[in-house]
Length: 438
Image (tube, rainbow, N blue to C red; front, side, top):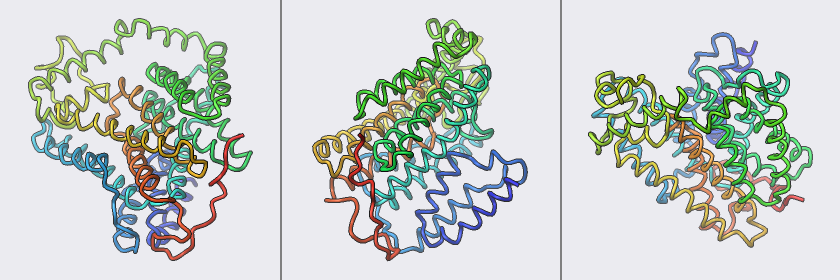
């Protein structure tokens, strides 16, 4: 039944996507983050829904009267450069077949990131995209938190099978990145029941991170909580949620969870900690011997490369760190480009914060810039222990940083009296424009 409902919904929306490509972008994001097909039981599981919606969206975008202009900034130029560089390293990859498959997946992500840059031209559209992210990943946060409470924290919370967030650690990273986006929506929702729902969502999502049993997720959750306190207005709500999550962790989680988290004090002596360090040493050795181009995507799959550069007795495995993985696969230039993307995204948000700090009309831009920074901090913290270098949410958040700066600083108002994206309809009044938290 789920398969049929999903198919009816997507095929029913395709004609609308052909008219309004922005709707296609939202559906593509929903499919990519929530993976609803992975919650089905039949033909919908393996059907290429994401590719179908992406192709129809691209066709609609090319045929529409939408502006094809991409806001060019240092970050958007770096995105193009990073894609070019990964193409070059893939041409010389150690495992060419696997590398080209991985490059294709990454290229598809960046193509839709550039579509995001072209289509998301108003505050309303930015707001809608953030809602899709929150609903898609918040579903697993709410469900995982409820599962943890009802089950006494005995079982691990994991993501949908066959997705970017299947692994418990990957899900913890995604949920930590979602928390600040929830906070932004909470600050700018005019309806009280929506704000209360988002508050509950933040609480359950935090508990779900505990339920993943991810040690890296716990570290990221602590860092995100501190960053939310420093970056957010109305800090009382953040304090209450953080204290409630801490209460659950201390008094509710079972001894098995406490014992696992206790290994953080001597992580290098655990099997998983040692294997991570071994993979980091492998990555560093590959980069030292191949400093320019690295080994290409998925270079760790090469047995000969692993035997040559991994520590003696190390078990062959993926490189569990976004930093060491990109260093090994893309060389030192790739790592520099990767880190530069975060630096420029952060600085762009800082410029927005300075420009809008004392402007009540643009308080939304101040808060969104702040929460985007916190989301990136969550990724950088949890990603230090995970091979999530090419996680699509990260790059779409970078696109939002570009868009926020372009439309927040270069234009007097991101919401015009009339729509300028080709549908000929007046922009709807936004009741959240002046909404401020109590």
